[in-house]
Every structure is written in C-alpha cells, then in structure tokens.
Image 1 (cartoon, rainbow, N blue to C red):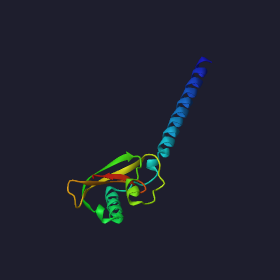
Image 2: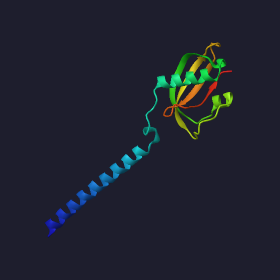
Image 3: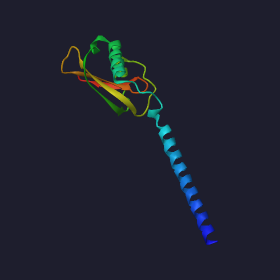
Image 4: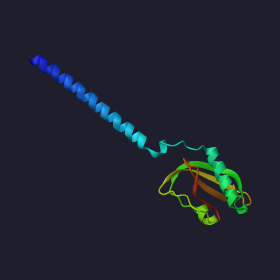
Length: 132
C-alpha cells in the first residue's frame, strides 16, 4: 500500500505542476494580447516625417519646414498645439499615446524649430510645439 500511495502522490504532484504551468502560460498570453500597442502596425519613422511635413505645409506658409533635426519615439499626452493654432478639428484621442516626435528646423529661421507629434499607430498629428 505504501508504494501505491507514493505513486499516486507523484502523479497528483505532476498533474498539479502541469496545471500551474498551463495557468501561467494563459495569464502571460492574455496579458500579451491585451497590450494595445501590439494590436496595430506601427508607422515607420519615414512615414511620420512625411505626415508631419505635409501637415505643417497644409496649415500655412509660415510653417515651412527645413531639415529634420531629430526624431524619437516617446509616449505623449495630446496637446493639440497645431490644431489650436490653425483652428482645426481635433482628433478624438485622450490619454497618453506612443508618438513619433519629429523636429524640423524652421526653413526661414535657422536655429528655430517646429515639433510635431504623430501617433505611432494611427498616423494622426496629436500635438507639438515650436520655437518662437
């Protein structure tokens, strides 16, 4: 009897370890799928530069861009700077978004910049700033 009980305990322990392993795998997979940044394809840096340049060109000649000074990927809370400035309708975005931050030199004012924030997944301009 003692040997049979030991074998049963070993089998129960193995089944418990398998169940725990499956439960952990399900939790990890669920968390991975719930990440909103991984549900969409991210736009490229070059696409973000193009979107930014087109956006500034479309709001007026005062915002003519020069060379790209730098780019970076960063989480930002929308400030709709350019929308407010040009009196445009704002996208329906709230809370932080992963954005391409594109900084251009101002074409007619070397040493000054335009900064445009482009949502990395939707391609919408959600903010920025400029040197005055």
